[in-house]
Length: 484
Image 1: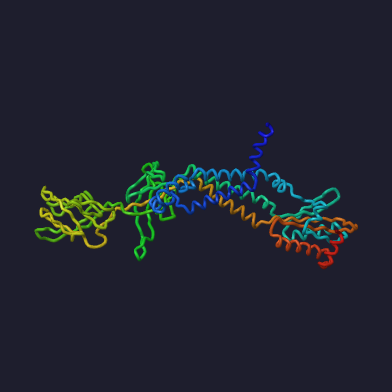
Image 2: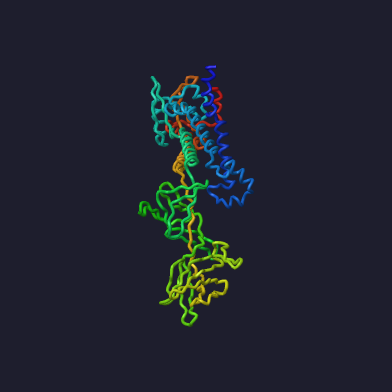
C-alpha cells in the first residue's frame, strides 16, 4: 500500500508528461477557442445584438454554460493551466537527455557509430598528420571551426554548427507557457466594460459586462467627438478627442478612432460607438414681432434667456426631439430629432406667455399672447444636438505575457525550422584489411538534402588536396559491400 502511495505522484507526472495527454489537452483548448469564434462573445459584442441572434432559451443555456464569455470562463482558464502543467512535466522529463546532448557533444565516434552513420566516406592516406591538416583547412574554408580531439595516441577532428538549435523546442515550450499564463491572468483578473461620455463632459465610471460598476481614480474627458461619412451618407469613422484628468491635471491626451485606443494606467479605451443623447445643444430660430418689424435670428440653449428687445426675453425650457400627440398632450417617441418640438417661455415686461414651436406644423405658434411668432431657421444646421462617445474599456494585464510569448515563439520556431545542427567527424583509422584511411562522417538533424551538398563538397575538397582520384560510384559501392 505504501509503495502504491509513493507511485501516485510519479503516475500523475508520467500522465501529464506523455505526448498523448499534451496533444489531447491542446486539442480541447483549440476546440474551445473555435467555439468562442462562432458564438457571439459578451466582452466584444453588444448585448442587444446577442439577444437578437439567439432565442431566450438558447441564450439562457449559453450564459449558463459560460459559452458567451469563453475566454473569461473558469473552465477555459483551467484548461490553459492543465496544458501548462503538461508542458512543464514534458520539459522536465526530457530535459536531462537534451541537456546531456547539448553540454557533452559526441566528439569521437566509436567503430559501431562509424559503421552505421549514413553519410561517411573513407579516403586512403599515407600520412595521418598531413591528412588531418588538409581536412582542418577544408573545414575552415567551408566556415566550420574544427576542434582537435586527442585521445591517447589518436588524434581526430570534430566540428559542428548551431548546436543551440537542439534547445529550440524548450524555447517554444516557454513561449506557450507565457501565452497561457497571459490568458489565465486575463481570465481571472482582467475585465471589460463600457463608458459613455457626453461631449465636453467627463466620466470616471465603467459599466462592467456583468452588471457591476468600477470607479476610476481619475476622469476621462471628451473634449470633442464626431463622425465622418462617405458620399452616400453611410458612416465612415467615429473619432473622439480624449483627455485623462488626474488630481486636476491633464496627464494624457489623444484623439482616438476605432482600433487606435487611448492607453493609460493599464486600461485601453477603444472607440466603440457614437450617437446623440437626445438633448439639444443649441437651436437657431427666427423671431418675428406680431406688431410688425424686422425678424431676427437667435440661438437658444436650454434654460438660457435671450433678449429679443429691451423689454422681451425668450427662454427654451423644454425640448422633445421626437414628439407625438395623444389626448391633447405631447409625449416623446425617441431620442432621434426627427420630429422636434420646442417649448418656449416669452417674458415681456413681467408678462409671460408659453408657446410651442413645432416645425412639423409649419413653424407657427397659436398663442396670441406672445408678442412674437417663431419659426425654425431653414437649413441642416438649425439644430445642434448633444453627442456622446461610447468607449469600450478593457483591462487585460496578461497581454504583455501573451505578446512576449508570441515574440518568443517566433524566435523559437525560427531556430527550430531554419537553424540546422550540423556535425562533422574526421579521423584516421585502419580498415579490416589493415589499410590506413581517413574516415569522414557527418550528420544533420534536418534539411538532409542541403546538408549532403555541404558534406560532399567537404569530401571533394579533402580528396582534391590529398591528390586522390574520385572513385566511381559503382566501384565504391562494391568496396562497401566487400567490407560488409
